[in-house]
Amino acid sequence: MAIIPLKAWYLGQYEPLQEVIQRPPDLRLSRNSLLKSALRADFLDDKEVIQQSEWFQKYLEGETVEFYIEGSGGYTIANLDLVSQELYLSKQNIAATLEPIIFFSGQIEYPHSSKIIQTVLTETIKQYNQRSRYPLTLEVAARSQDSPLRLSDTQLRKLRKSLLLVVDGTPITEIKQEETSRLIPSPYICTELGYALESKRKGQLLLLHQQRSDVSGQWPFDLPSHQQLEFKTADELSQTLPPVIEALLQRFKLTP
Image 1 (spheres, one colour):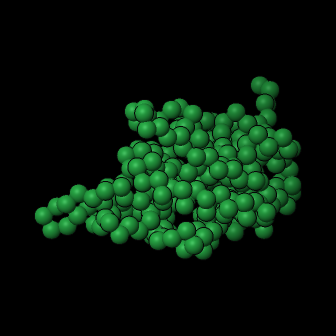
Image 2: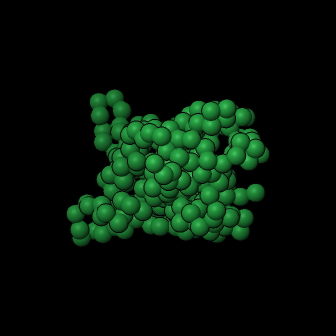
Image 3: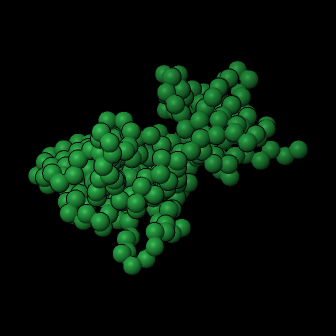
């Protein structure tokens, strides 16, 4: 039976998939078996070439090594045996399928906070792009006061494919309870936030909210502290937002 080589590209840092497949592959494989969540293959490259590769050194150091395999998708190395020249890989969602987009989910019920966030976020991206390998763009969720709440396929795709989702969770009102009050955010951002919690990785979500003197109460979301940022004024957000965005994007290795 003729061997049909599979091309595999090492994903050491973020690159859009369309650009990844334009460069020469880093590895050639012969597939032995394919399962729903795993792949077993033989090396077709010489062992000496593999031992000198960047990705093999990362594997020896215990780092997670990701590949895009032609026709199969994203995988990480689960086990490797140079003696038998076998490679075991686990199915993995890879960053290469994402687009260099920051998606902003704003609101129309209390537009003051969303206007501040969008302005500061635009300037933050502008400054970040001066050092980024790929220029990031800002996508703003479409809002309409006349239409019912509905997420289009295009909007869901942009949200899912974005490197980072920024949400304006500033409360629009409060509900009084017997002993406490509960803050209520916009239904638009609740819908998009719920979708993002299921479709995006940890660290790809940032929830912002502006302090309001006219409402107070218990916050309804329980996200890690590094994924939430509270602010009072535009000047304060201009100081605090850029380093948070920088930290969340660090995993993509876009800057030196």
